Amino acid sequence: MQSQTKTKRTKLLSVIGDEDTVCGFLLAGIGEVNQHKESNYFVVKKDTPVSAIEETFKRFTSSEDIAVVIINQHVAEKIRDLVYSYRAPIPAVLEIPSKDQPYDLSQDSTVKRVRQMLGLGA
Image (tube, rainbow, N blue to C red; front, top):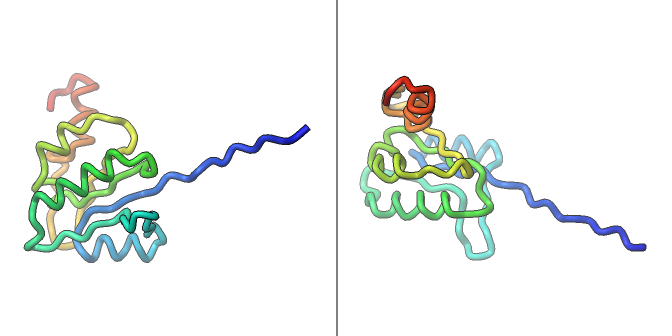
């Protein structure tokens, strides 16, 4: 009798952020490039078009390989409507601060959803 082994593929973290944030996560080992030459990270610079950020966010949140999308809050602000409209639990979207931009807890999409679920308003 043959043993059937299910191959369980690990899910990835992805990151959208400034160069320092992305570099830090890459140094921690999250970098991955798939067979289509698509990476799980995206560096946002001052001149990065909002459409490129939106496209990357949509690609990451629709990927079955990604469990968590980490995004700098100041980058999430550029696509705030898209971030707020994303409702799926996986991949989870986590907004994090960057070293050069202040973090505003009241704008964090995860905090807003938790407050709504607890009946504490937005």
